[in-house]
Image (tube, rainbow, N blue to C red):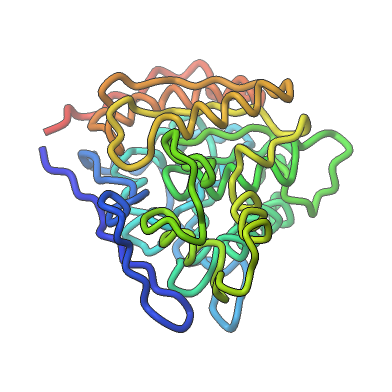
Length: 328
């Protein structure tokens, strides 16, 4: 079986920045899993414009079940290495996310929030928020409940989704219909704390590895003019584990023990922060799992069943599980 991880060369707005930290050359690109042949479980609406930034259209694909719908929706944040090309969306397709969620009756809105070549993390987060707001505004068009949205992301997409969730809080009956809160969130191997990465304290101004990476993510206009405290605050602002409040929605986190790109410590840090605030959260550890692992569709199925409970899905619960072809 062959896996592919995207190479990484971060481009700032004015110049190219090459990551010099060994593994950072491939950091946070979701890998390729065995592809399953389509069985037409969904209809795919491509390149729907949900917003605009700096004259650039922000796009999503919408996956509508061809079978029974449950009246609920999942927002999937498409980003690997903080790049949201169509190739990253195909990675999620290979992980069978759209097949599995559609089989459970969910409509999936796959948001592409832009790439680090053009946008820094705060802008990408704002784009994800715009996407969620778009889904809520168009809920009637797709026959979904805007107050019962699930949110998903993997790797860099998991980072952005987590940051959106903890900063927007949990949807309640009284939540405005134009906010970006969600009911529950599931993420795979997300980076969550850029000040303590893999148990090592990071200096964003002087670290030659993660510090270089952070310049493209948190300091698009440069870092030299900032003092140490100002630089630290910028990094905290993009670290979900350091932004958690008691209003955060329930989390289900997946991480492999053999992940060579994002240390499992990152998911454990997020879990600890959520538990400290009394937020329902669980970390499912995949023994010897990499970034990702060949059978990740099994964890996607686990996530879909968890969403069924969290979001109150009932209409397709009696359907038999879908049989996928064996991995080749």
